[in-house]
Length: 221
Length: 221
DNA sequence: TTCCTTCCGTTGTAATAACAACCGAAAATC
DNA sequence: GATTTTCGGTTGTTATTACAACGGAAGGAA
Image (cartoon, rainbow over all chains, first blue to last red; front, side, top):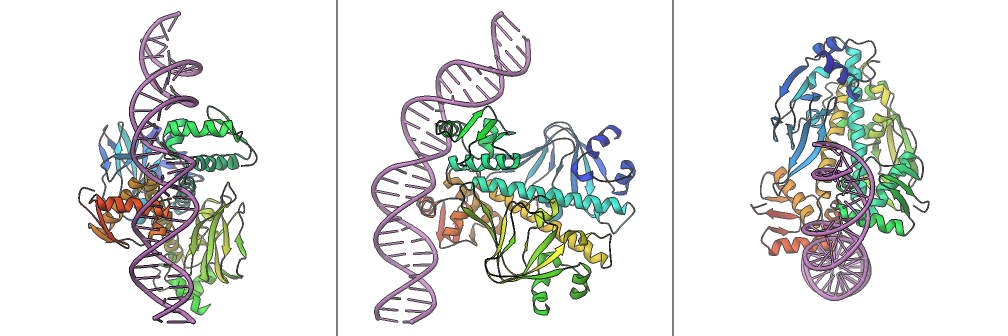
């Protein structure tokens, strides 16, 4: 566990825990480690979840079965990243499938053990709960932003909405986005070639300038 | 405050508080009431927020200014409903504008006062924090679901995705949706008349049946 | 009743995007 | 250096949707 500990100790869930012994804290939280083989299902749809999962090593895929039977990938979580937290917090049945896409070690933390009511490490528990809230809230803001882009009627508007947000968050007209074309198309729920066409048109109109994933958005937008 | 208290006491944030005196709890939480006039701005974009807002009476509108300068309405919150919680939890600058669309009374609860560290009513504070997490997590799941629908390439798929989810959550092929056509179109980010056309086509193809907001989705979907 | 409003389906047109296929440049691998 | 893979732009066709406008049905209000 030693080496893995370092990896998760930097994760958002465990931030700002002053002078706490990681090993002892995890014992107090009744954390359990478990290994999953490549392809193994970690959580099934419909299941109720009463603990948080944190990836120690490997990779998990969170996906959802479509009404058409297609499997849509919602997230890929690597070391230090958490999954299932929303379902643990609401105690709602899982709507997603979680699988190990490599050999994966997961650290499970019972949700109830985070309650500051019980045990020692009270300070730490309080901090973790606060961190968890911050993570949920942050995800909320992110999801709301994406919905705002996706709600635009035309791809052109989606693109401008996204680029404007990026420019604003970067604080300037020139900025680099963290996505390549295919990822950007997926994020905006569009076809890559259609995205390319729209970007080209915006460039010809003098509204944007770009090279690879570096963009400049001109003032009128 | 007396009458307003009853209204918010049923709100999700204050659920499961056994044998707690609402008045005293609110004092302990350093809650403050403030009145806003019709049209008055409650929270400005860019502002940092360190408290939760709860509508006692009236109505607040949460909106966001578009890159085009359009104002998009994100939420309308009435009595008992909370706003700003995601920004208070992350301490990120507001990206939204909150206004009173009627004469409105807001109860403000400092975020820090929820910490179980301080003061009395520890049990209650812990429960409120847990409720808050549940609310954030629930919103997360809801937003994720909406993104899933919005991510479909065609309106037809968006509609089927939405109806399938509704059918699944209702647990049967026949169900009633909580939206009228215009609201459904807005939710799916589409034109109302285009939605009508798609619904009509699905009906002609024998895939769905509907009358007003009562739908039946046939088995193959 | 009559009027008015809300809700929803229809039509027609123009704009738009999806999809498939192809191509060249750059990057990575051998 | 040669080969393969990845990435992104282009083209052409077809399906889909936005948009504007209209009309009819249902439900209230006068």
